[in-house]
Amino acid sequence: MRPTRQRVLLAQLLFARGDRHVTAEILFNEAIEANIELSIATIYNTLTRFTKAGLLRRIMPNRSRLFFDTDTSIHPHLYLVDEGILINIPEKLLFAQTPRALPGHEISRLDVIVYIRRRAADI
Image (cartoon, rainbow, N blue to C red):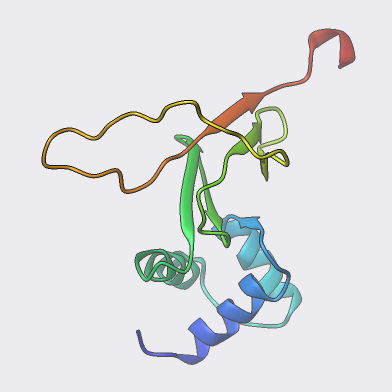
């Protein structure tokens, strides 16, 4: 992947703050705040290229929300349904058993997303 000006600037925005979950819209707003002129299409394309290169992990908790995770390790998430926020589960989860891949296949990734919402009494 060529290090174009746009890719370098977006990489700085993405990775300067440590591990986090971003959407293209979040990154677009951060670019505006940093006086970086980029189209939302350029941001989507760059995030897709970074994902294909293994620099990001794509997480889609529902059909209308797409996050990019700067931590590409296997780790579980909480999705706060009411707020549309994705966060890492802070505890280390242990699985007694993971499923076996079908013959001739291997597991390429494991995603665990726990969907939570506020209780009606707490709203």
